[in-house]
Image (cartoon, rainbow, N blue to C red):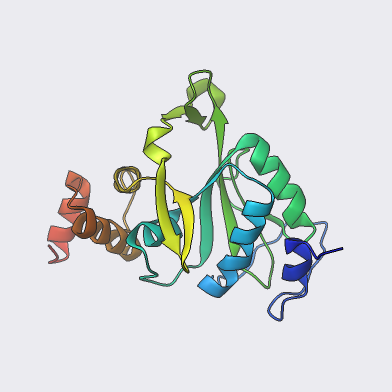
Length: 206
């Protein structure tokens, strides 16, 4: 029988399965492109409804890695999320404590690899999605996440540049956030939001 992607990851030189029954909190490590590629294989093998988000999602849109990353963020449909959680528990992933843990936004990780940051979407009757507390969920249109990008020569699904820029609002921006939105602005000739422009002005950037 041919080895599964999980077998290949477990047998990789950089990964040792780790079992734990308690939630953990791990020190940030760089999540490299070399780390990422086997998991892209796993997502494909599991036929997941998943979109690479966060910093890796921005780099996918840019077509190359432009900065370091500490984790992998993704949007994922609920049924796919359940399948992925089951699969990565076999790799030693456990729940990672965060102050804002919810059923729709949670983190799993291992000491050997940096964290997966889940953002779980519920499909709606009209073919779009919702995110967050069902009593006060945020609508997410299928069009807004219908982007594609490239990572390590692989085509991946990801949110659109417009979605990414819109997502970087409403909180205190870090330098990595500014790097991401300005890179998207420059490549796709998109306007930034006033908050983003104010941050650039305050730091002498344009």
